[in-house]
Length: 266
Image 1 (tube, rainbow, N blue to C red):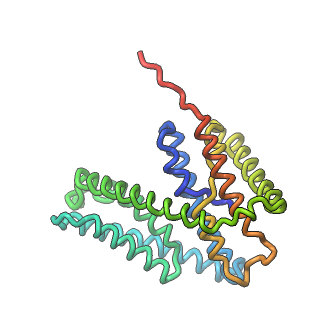
Image 2: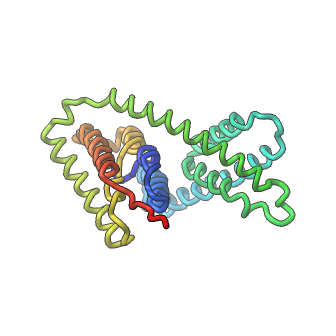
Image 3: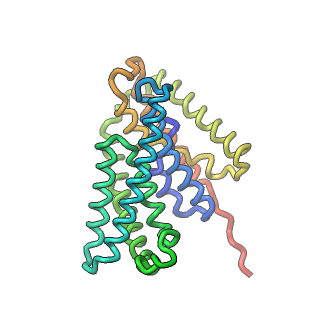
């Protein structure tokens, strides 16, 4: 429940000032990746052993290498293809890279992160005698296409998530006194930790960042991926739903009452 849902919070930052938007995007994306990596590590047997640490570190290194190679291959292919079929090519390669990561048990989200970083910073890769392989104008066109793909697919995934999430919520659980008490306690802890983090660590403006801490897609997926032998039989799933719904409502209120400072023009 410590993972901020980037799928929910990022689309909600469209009207925020650029610096605030940038902070929320990076914070939520890194929260997703670190949360999933830590979750996978905790599921390992003897997680404090040297062997487990070595295997986990090796998987991360392998993910970075695979992603770098896939990115270079994609850039090379896109610069050679003249047909107007780039959308499906990009989608197919991304799906192949992600699935490959899942099959060989390496962090797939880290692969996609490195993939995006290399694509967006291709100018740092292709310099000198390699500059002719990918001109900046051509790469900008590809990046615009990828941003369009990302925006449309994320909207689709987010829509289906909330539909399925609504189907799975048992309203009776949300009014259970135990669920309300424990859920409120968890949300309160999240709120206090976020306040201390923003106020004393970052020394940043608290509004609306303090309220932008929704839990959602990743939280639900991680919960349902907990192996049966590690599941707490006494845990009430209604607490999970309560935290997701409450933090989403808090984000909504924060965005409603936030007013960006007006720009004074001469």
